[in-house]
Image 1: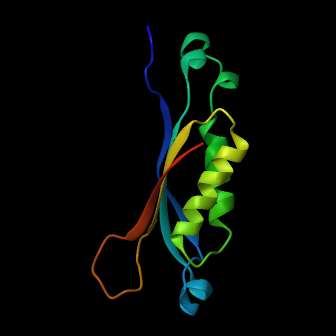
Image 2 (image 1 turned 135 degrees about the vertical axis):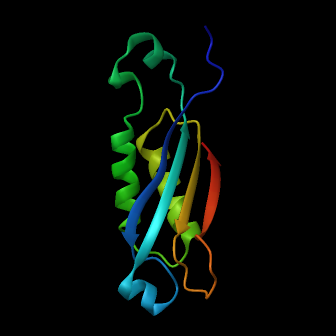
Length: 122
């Protein structure tokens, strides 16, 4: 068997954070959703059933959590920091997709959220 593509993902992680350009967003904060898909070779994990040969998604979560705790004006900056931290920490990661969504954006619109999505390669 040959695996042609493999990914680990964390979908809709929820955080309360203080990102935004408005003073209220930095003071009061808001709810965010983050999704992360990391492309990594999982052939060894498939063959050997050992966590040591794959990416531990609990460690991925902690990395995202640490980045979400650092306030930024722009969601673009937050998403890029998350991506860079993944690349810096997990050297086997080939590429990734990260989405950061502000669930209740202060723009007077009735919507489920506003956000950014970045696709990054090493």
